Amino acid sequence: MIYLFQETVNSLITGFCVVRRMFAPEDMEFISHQPARELTSAFLKERKELAISSIRETRQQITLLVNLHFKLASYTYDPSPRFEFKLFANYLWFIIVCHLLAFSIRLYGPFEVEKMLDQTLSAAEQFCHAVNDRLEKTNPGRLSPARGSQLA
Image 1: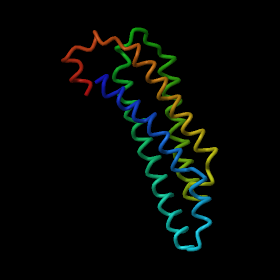
Image 2: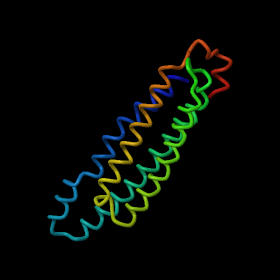
Image 3: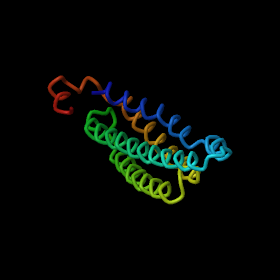
């Protein structure tokens, strides 16, 4: 269970670099200098679809992390309702921002939302680090095999 948790966090953090690259302005700069307009149009369409799909995937992985976190929360060395509430509020904010980002991409295109993308990914990274910190405070001795199977 804990391994799955760590794997998800590490996968997300690594994936953020890929997402940032997907929105790199250099790609748009290069494609805009190509003579074929259909190429630019096809590129923008594909990049838009890929960006929205990537946001959806990131949102799903963060949701998985939240679910895993709440299942493991009672097994921590120092449970904190305040931390749990703050984490949940950050999660809700992240979901709202993801929807706004996807809407903005549909409206303006993937290369016009750089600042919003940076804020969204920064929020996701902070969320992952907070969850990872909580994971480090999980008492693995309290996770018996019977309990661990109930968590899955």
